[in-house]
Image (cartoon, rainbow, N blue to C red; front, side):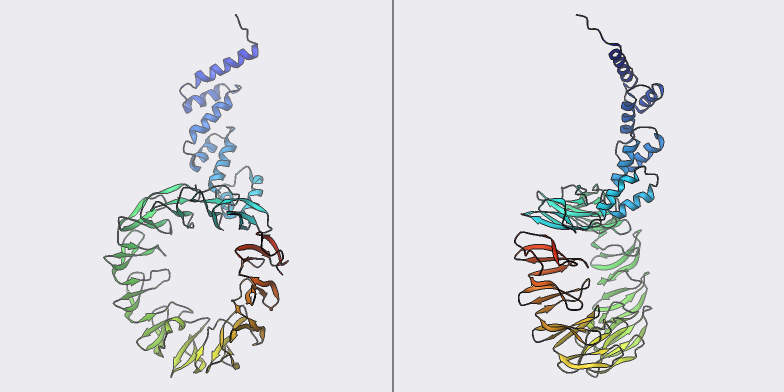
Amino acid sequence: MIISLSSSEARSRLQEAIYREATADMELASYTSFIREHPESPYVRNAEAEVYRLYTPRRTVDEYKKFIQERSSNHRVGDAWRAIYEIRTRDLSAAAITKFLQDFPDYPFVEELVDDYRTASLNLLPFRRGEQWGFIDDSGVERIKAEYEWVEEFRGGQAIVSRDGRVGTINRSGRQVVPFEYDDIEEATEGTSTVELGDRFGAVDAGGELVVPLIYDDVGEFSKGMAYAAQNGKYGYINARGEVLIPLQYSSAGTFRNGMAVVQVDGRSGVIDTKGNLVVAPIYDWVEGFEEPLSRVRKDGRMGLIGPFGDELLPLQYDHIGSFNDGRALVVDGRKCGYIDEQAKVVIPVEYEAAEGVSNWGDFQNGLAKVQQGGKRCMINTANSKVFSCQYADIAAASGVLIPVRKKTKWGFADRKGTILFENRYDQAWGMVDGLARVRNGELYGMVDSTGREAFPLRYVGLLEPNFGFVVAEGPEGSGLLSLTGKEVVALVYDAVDVRSAKLARVERNDAFGYIDLETGRFIWREEGLLKEAE
């Protein structure tokens, strides 16, 4: 039986045969020649698709960029642009989208990014449905389905979550970024996160790709592209591609700060630079490191200061050296203490009494430091002038315009010039935060404002320091929120209250939780069984 073909069917088969024959070797050159020699063929799009595939075997940004530059007329150029965008903004953060547009100003689909920007800017909150967790936005709308065993807060563009006993990350649209393959994931630093699987450590990049293989016993935090790593009890340093930059030869190692890292050799600590050169010989029992210009060191129970080249700027003769505040650091030598400046020079003589716990309360704060002389506490400034005379049994933190002082058993307040507003009123008083200081008599707490007035009467079982313009207060029936003027904003009936922002609080009662809009006082979302209103 003879089957006749229509002219169009015959033409179609011929065109297909020509395409198959011309590209039989499936090489880039063949597809390129076919496109050039047969521009009207319906198989040009097939050839262009194969060109795209051959240009991007590893699907990297560089491959996509080269394809776009060299094959601008290919119908897959749009796909290449979107692939670059997907790779560079996988965590879907506003910062990543902005950086992408800075790096790729010719991106042809800018109008499509509006929704992504909106999603990237969402404030997402964990919520629970039954035993599963997801995310809602701050108006209570479910944005990411509750399908995870547990979730952590979003940090940047990603949240660490768990599913089927494994840990991964998702972006703000709910799309997986780091695959659910790991036992643990650390928060990202410099776009790289340490991951753990079966007691082995590696690292993934911001797009979720494993860039440091799971071959290490430990991998630290990345700083300027370097992190410590350990194998068989020895530490060294790797880059964000897993390449060893400094051999694994130390008994321990720390994170690089300002181009220097603390390492240990045979139980002694020293410092190396990013090339692995020793800049401080390993002769100390402890080295603080160079997050600041100078580093505290300890040897044989005595402390001193060294510079970034290992030069000893302050001899190893002190029992304690505090951290620098207001350009001064406390030094303790036996029963005496004083202060040094940032050039390691003693600027306040070591002549004050090193009373019990001085290392905890003797640092400068807001230009003032508490000292003791003749068994009495005083307050000095950075020039060693006495602002408060030595007449007090104790002085609290100089954190506000009023400072708590105690002469005998009761506390009062003085201003920053040492003028007493009132004395002997409270059993306990704390430093000011946001213009309020907590005070206590017996078991009840209140607040004093910057004029010394009791802004909150002493009727609360507990009060926390102000946060985001609110105070967590506890009454006989539970905890709630007060404004800075003492007005009740959230009823004192909850087991726990956490102020998340100036507009939002998380409350918990009987193992159920919800979120309250602090402007309206109403829940934006709550678990079943929690109070319907925040009043």
